[in-house]
Length: 73
Image (cartoon, rainbow, N blue to C red; front, side):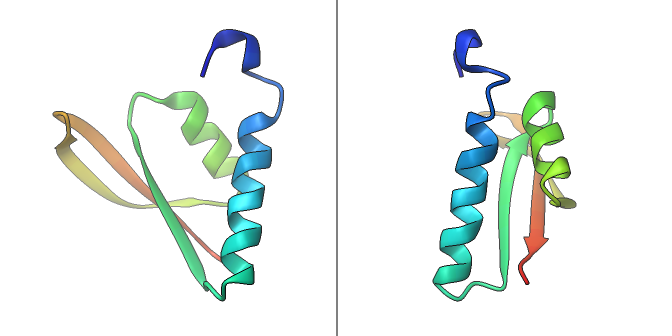
């Protein structure tokens, strides 16, 4: 994301809409994966209630990835 858009809550709103739509479609759990180096994204996911569930070594273009998941109520 471009610097001028960071810290404005856009990512959080997108994540909330994704979760809302997943619930509407009947999902009980959602997951995502992100490069280990994307610290701001990881912070957002953890603050939104996602927990680390797995690790993919050199998975995507040689990058290590972490799998995060969240159970939906």
